[in-house]
Image (spheres, rainbow over the protein chains, first blue to last red):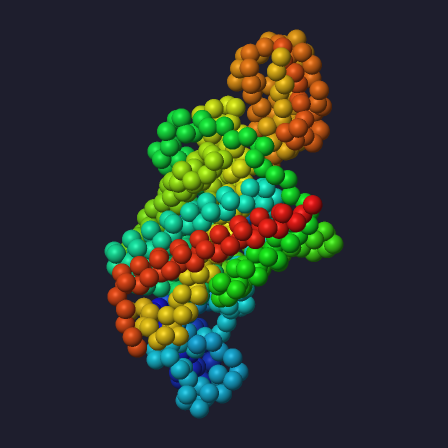
Length: 454
Length: 70
Length: 40
């Protein structure tokens, strides 16, 4: 919109300047007048103070939102590692004319030399109405890691390297709860479709229920990059709010008696290092045979974990869980934040996404708790249903919540390690669900089913 | 006579009672750190602290007795 | 291009997705249990 007039005005000005100097040639002492004529020209003022004149109410609101995110991250400690870069990226992208990033992507063609040649031949841009622009620095980051889903996967190597699947391996059947925790995703999918979101939009919204930032970003950049801003902000905000959102839902779904149930640690059988080493390899092979398209997510997660457990590559583990994870988080946050321009973000859709994301996480919690109750019906080793709520990917917040709620109900109840097992299975579960979804959509697309957004 | 075992594997941060202290069931008696979370260990029964067997800073697991009550 | 209804799409994804997820997790539990049998 306003970018286009900016350019027109710019050319207009040059013409004005050239004309004035041509007229004044020879008269010499009229130079001042000529300069005055230029600087009092409306077009000139309009463009020289472009930062102000192109400032819209959307920019103002978005900058305010950016500041709020920074405040929540920096002052209130809600996921600061992500919300701070996201907030700053949002401010950068919404200051007019900075040309750091160009979203939505469909409207732009990037100006590389080959395209320049095509342009001169009158063959550019390919997309009708698209404007040829130079890449801004955030465009470079976007193309390097978001458009091709690289950053979330790099992050997964770090997450894998940080995760200890020990508690899960000690009691492998709780892995079912990591699956039950994903039911919320499908509940949200149905809700989103029912209230009129398009198919691929609904999938991106539903995946917020995985409570897993990188997975949400991966799926969204794959299926509907226009929603990246709202979805990643919703995902990360709700992740940081897990300690507030989950307890009421957990209490609502259980009786005091159920919450008091003490789980001993005797039912956990110890595992050897060999099992821990073999686990990531086995998971990779089994899950990727079932859902090959999840290779990028599951492959990187399990690769990171294998690095950790094999014990031979301490330096690589260090790099994965510190340097790689930190650098990726920084670039990912900044770039995702920069996709939040007013045009894209300030819509009713965004509000819907936040509402549905909330339902998704409450749904996950409730389904997890009921999943645990269901398991109790069929097994002789009873479990405390509270740990079912940890079957989401928000690690380790969710396990801590289970420990806290259980401990409040009965001080003799220490659920933390049990909940950790469920929590790590929630990580596997959410990646698995995402992989399966990609597989199904891929299958539909090869069948020639129309999934395009209207 | 009751043993207070570590509820889970972790690091014992501090023992919050002394030998001879009287404790009631569900009083906090020690602090444990597991998975970067601080967890209070609560007395399993009423009694008097007879002996403290674990030191702060030690890595403990459910087989370790932190203290005995009588 | 074949067109399918939004809700049909949703149910399809839910039923197939959940079945595949839970099956994979079930297989994983079996495999881990077997692994643990051989660990000593």
